[in-house]
Length: 123
Image (cartoon, rainbow, N blue to C red; front, side, top):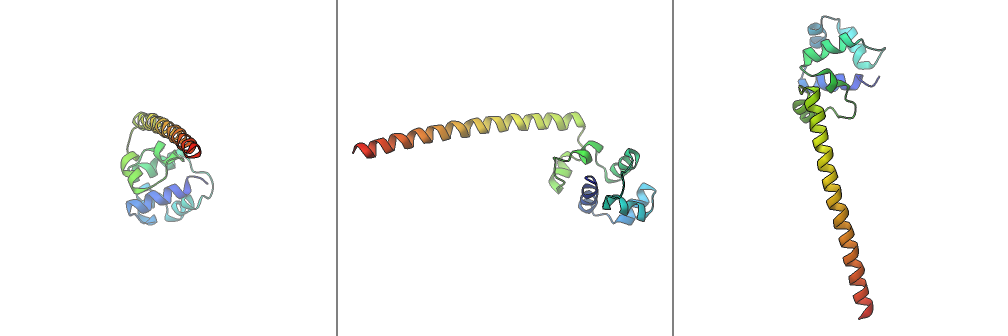
């Protein structure tokens, strides 16, 4: 199950034991443990309870392309979905600008190297 390792990582970063999370979610430790092991398919309600206990948004939990790190958890964990999308769009725009700069610099560098080679050969 793709969510299971994310549940475990969030719990570990927050410093909770499985039994404490289970109690706060009003479930058994065994049931919660099976969530982290990826046994079966959790209900959305169960995932929402986990998110409430861990103080994260459900869309953060489900954003598989966003690694669960302490930094990401603090920065994006409680962010509204629209804010998350906005930040993502801004980062993509910045990436395009940097790629453009790198491409232009690589092209200039290649042109410079060709000119330099031509001068060395001519000399």
